[in-house]
Image 1 (spheres, rainbow, N blue to C red):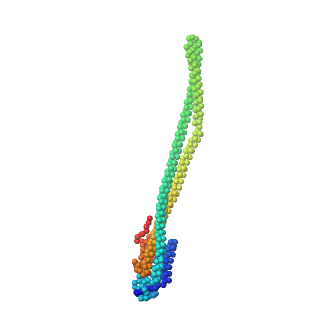
Image 2: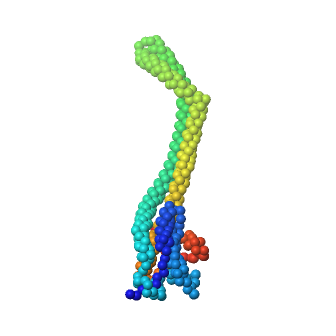
Image 3: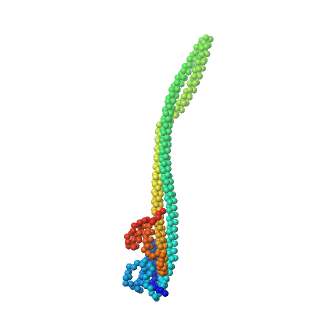
Length: 422
């Protein structure tokens, strides 16, 4: 039977290293979920604790058992973890991996549930965050549209109120001017009527003099008829015709006197009425007081219209300016929330990158488990490619700066942006 010489490892030391790496990964994941550490530090710690610890343990065991003349402390980790084709053969041991390596491989295999749960949890967080971000964006878009409609409605209402106040002021001023013009016209008409009535009184007085003249004519006619009657009686039969004429003249004089007396009574009554109207119209104090009162009412009406317009316009401008300012602040806050949601989506992409990194780490540990089982993995073990893949998923400059601070190097500029925005 062909045998090979395999370096023996301390079983307790190897098991402690594996358990320590597992505990470190679990603790780092919990701290990362609690937002106490950076997620990339968790991945690096897991890789360094698991892979580095095992590699150093194996190398230390090999150096203590069979030190070589050309051994160097700068041997890289992938060289230590790659298959060992040049191990010298020994007839004392059978071909195959030792029990410690088998147990280490089995221990690494026990990490599969942890990585599965962690990956699924991270992807669940990614899905929930993406859904929540989409819902927030939709709600904010609705809120922004409602705010825009509200601002437009407020602007229309403000313009309507200001226009209504201005139209009301113009209407009140027009009404006041019309009423003032009408009252002034009535005053002028009343003054003209008063003057006309005064002239009528004068004419009635002249009629009184005419009536007196007619009374004198009637009296003279009566005297003439009386004389004619006397002469006709004296003439006897020769004066019978004159007697008839005398009687007619006497009757005419009597009727004229009665008509003139009636006309005098009526003229006196009309004169009394006209005198009363003229006396009331000539009351200058009363007329002046009414004119002053009308002017005062017109002034007060104009002042009320001006004050009402100024008050309504001032309230509209002040209140609606405040409402517009508040609407502007709401719009600004909506914009800020949009930015925060965009940042949340960036975080979602970071978590998604962490989940992919955990999956790559799981595949790397699977290859390492195959190597420990004595099988050649499908691809060479290259831990540095894992970090390069992680760096390729960076979406912010903060991640690159944190990477540079962690490894003590300079921050690299992003060649292409993999960030996805809404």
